[in-house]
Image 1 (cartoon, rainbow, N blue to C red):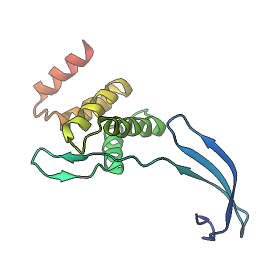
Image 2 (image 1 turned 120 degrees about the horizontal axis):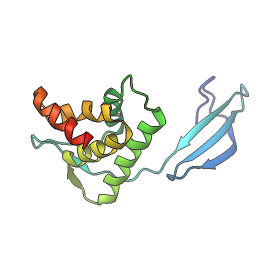
Image 3 (image 1 turned 180 degrees about the vertical axis):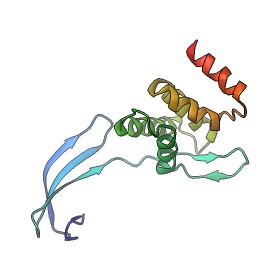
Length: 148
Protein backbone atom coordinates (compact mmCIF):
# COMPACT_ATOMS: atom_id res chain seq x y z
CA UNK A 1 0.00 0.00 0.00
CA UNK A 2 1.49 3.31 -1.09
CA UNK A 3 0.85 6.54 0.79
CA UNK A 4 -1.39 8.84 -1.28
CA UNK A 5 0.60 11.86 -0.04
CA UNK A 6 4.26 10.88 -0.53
CA UNK A 7 3.97 7.50 -2.36
CA UNK A 8 6.04 5.73 0.29
CA UNK A 9 5.45 2.00 0.68
CA UNK A 10 6.10 2.18 4.43
CA UNK A 11 2.81 2.35 6.29
CA UNK A 12 1.27 0.62 9.26
CA UNK A 13 -2.30 -0.15 10.23
CA UNK A 14 -3.53 1.69 13.33
CA UNK A 15 -7.20 0.65 13.26
CA UNK A 16 -9.37 -1.94 11.50
CA UNK A 17 -13.17 -1.84 11.20
CA UNK A 18 -15.50 -4.38 9.53
CA UNK A 19 -18.70 -3.24 7.83
CA UNK A 20 -21.94 -5.18 7.48
CA UNK A 21 -21.36 -6.06 3.80
CA UNK A 22 -18.13 -7.92 4.45
CA UNK A 23 -15.75 -5.05 3.69
CA UNK A 24 -12.83 -3.91 5.82
CA UNK A 25 -11.80 -0.32 6.51
CA UNK A 26 -8.23 0.16 7.68
CA UNK A 27 -6.81 3.39 9.10
CA UNK A 28 -3.15 3.71 8.24
CA UNK A 29 -0.28 6.02 9.07
CA UNK A 30 2.64 6.62 6.70
CA UNK A 31 6.10 5.77 8.04
CA UNK A 32 7.70 8.59 6.01
CA UNK A 33 5.43 11.65 6.19
CA UNK A 34 3.22 10.57 9.17
CA UNK A 35 0.00 11.40 7.27
CA UNK A 36 -3.07 9.30 8.05
CA UNK A 37 -5.38 7.78 5.44
CA UNK A 38 -7.97 5.04 5.07
CA UNK A 39 -8.07 2.04 2.78
CA UNK A 40 -11.10 -0.10 2.01
CA UNK A 41 -11.03 -3.78 1.18
CA UNK A 42 -13.77 -6.06 -0.02
CA UNK A 43 -13.76 -9.67 -1.09
CA UNK A 44 -13.71 -10.19 -4.84
CA UNK A 45 -16.29 -12.78 -5.75
CA UNK A 46 -16.82 -13.86 -9.32
CA UNK A 47 -19.58 -12.03 -11.13
CA UNK A 48 -21.12 -13.59 -14.22
CA UNK A 49 -20.55 -12.42 -17.76
CA UNK A 50 -23.43 -10.32 -19.00
CA UNK A 51 -25.13 -11.34 -22.22
CA UNK A 52 -26.24 -8.17 -23.99
CA UNK A 53 -29.37 -7.99 -26.15
CA UNK A 54 -27.29 -8.18 -29.33
CA UNK A 55 -25.62 -11.39 -28.10
CA UNK A 56 -22.29 -9.84 -27.07
CA UNK A 57 -20.80 -10.91 -23.77
CA UNK A 58 -18.99 -8.53 -21.46
CA UNK A 59 -17.72 -8.47 -17.91
CA UNK A 60 -19.87 -6.91 -15.21
CA UNK A 61 -18.49 -3.40 -14.71
CA UNK A 62 -19.32 -1.95 -11.31
CA UNK A 63 -18.14 1.54 -12.27
CA UNK A 64 -20.21 1.56 -15.49
CA UNK A 65 -23.31 0.60 -13.53
CA UNK A 66 -22.64 3.26 -10.91
CA UNK A 67 -22.20 5.93 -13.62
CA UNK A 68 -25.56 4.99 -15.14
CA UNK A 69 -27.32 5.18 -11.79
CA UNK A 70 -25.64 8.52 -10.99
CA UNK A 71 -26.90 9.95 -14.31
CA UNK A 72 -30.44 8.90 -13.41
CA UNK A 73 -30.06 10.44 -9.94
CA UNK A 74 -28.43 13.68 -11.15
CA UNK A 75 -29.73 16.78 -9.33
CA UNK A 76 -31.92 14.61 -7.11
CA UNK A 77 -31.69 14.39 -3.30
CA UNK A 78 -30.12 10.94 -3.42
CA UNK A 79 -27.10 10.35 -1.19
CA UNK A 80 -23.94 8.97 -2.74
CA UNK A 81 -23.98 6.25 -0.09
CA UNK A 82 -27.42 5.13 -1.28
CA UNK A 83 -26.16 4.84 -4.85
CA UNK A 84 -23.13 2.84 -3.70
CA UNK A 85 -25.40 0.62 -1.61
CA UNK A 86 -27.63 -0.05 -4.62
CA UNK A 87 -24.63 -0.92 -6.79
CA UNK A 88 -23.39 -3.25 -4.05
CA UNK A 89 -26.80 -4.92 -3.85
CA UNK A 90 -26.85 -5.47 -7.61
CA UNK A 91 -23.37 -6.97 -7.54
CA UNK A 92 -24.22 -9.21 -4.57
CA UNK A 93 -27.40 -10.49 -6.23
CA UNK A 94 -25.48 -11.28 -9.41
CA UNK A 95 -22.90 -13.21 -7.39
CA UNK A 96 -25.67 -15.09 -5.58
CA UNK A 97 -27.10 -16.27 -8.91
CA UNK A 98 -24.12 -18.59 -9.20
CA UNK A 99 -24.13 -18.81 -13.00
CA UNK A 100 -21.21 -18.13 -15.33
CA UNK A 101 -23.40 -16.00 -17.63
CA UNK A 102 -26.62 -14.08 -17.17
CA UNK A 103 -28.70 -11.68 -19.21
CA UNK A 104 -28.03 -7.97 -18.85
CA UNK A 105 -31.81 -7.63 -18.36
CA UNK A 106 -31.33 -9.13 -14.90
CA UNK A 107 -29.09 -6.21 -13.96
CA UNK A 108 -31.59 -3.70 -15.35
CA UNK A 109 -34.47 -5.34 -13.48
CA UNK A 110 -32.57 -5.19 -10.17
CA UNK A 111 -31.65 -1.52 -10.74
CA UNK A 112 -35.23 -0.59 -11.69
CA UNK A 113 -36.50 -2.31 -8.55
CA UNK A 114 -33.96 -0.46 -6.39
CA UNK A 115 -34.54 2.95 -7.97
CA UNK A 116 -38.29 2.62 -7.57
CA UNK A 117 -37.88 2.66 -3.79
CA UNK A 118 -34.92 5.07 -3.78
CA UNK A 119 -36.24 7.98 -5.90
CA UNK A 120 -39.24 7.98 -8.23
CA UNK A 121 -37.86 10.64 -10.59
CA UNK A 122 -34.57 8.72 -10.94
CA UNK A 123 -36.66 5.61 -11.57
CA UNK A 124 -38.53 7.32 -14.44
CA UNK A 125 -35.27 8.65 -15.92
CA UNK A 126 -33.71 5.18 -15.86
CA UNK A 127 -36.93 3.54 -17.10
CA UNK A 128 -37.13 5.83 -20.14
CA UNK A 129 -33.86 4.36 -21.40
CA UNK A 130 -34.07 0.84 -19.95
CA UNK A 131 -37.69 0.12 -20.83
CA UNK A 132 -37.44 2.01 -24.13
CA UNK A 133 -40.25 4.46 -23.39
CA UNK A 134 -40.23 6.18 -26.76
CA UNK A 135 -43.10 8.63 -26.47
CA UNK A 136 -44.89 10.74 -23.89
CA UNK A 137 -47.84 8.36 -23.70
CA UNK A 138 -45.55 5.48 -22.69
CA UNK A 139 -43.89 7.69 -20.05
CA UNK A 140 -47.31 8.79 -18.77
CA UNK A 141 -48.47 5.17 -18.54
CA UNK A 142 -45.36 4.30 -16.50
CA UNK A 143 -45.91 7.30 -14.21
CA UNK A 144 -49.56 6.33 -13.71
CA UNK A 145 -48.47 2.78 -12.85
CA UNK A 146 -45.93 4.17 -10.38
CA UNK A 147 -48.55 6.40 -8.71
CA UNK A 148 -51.11 3.58 -8.43
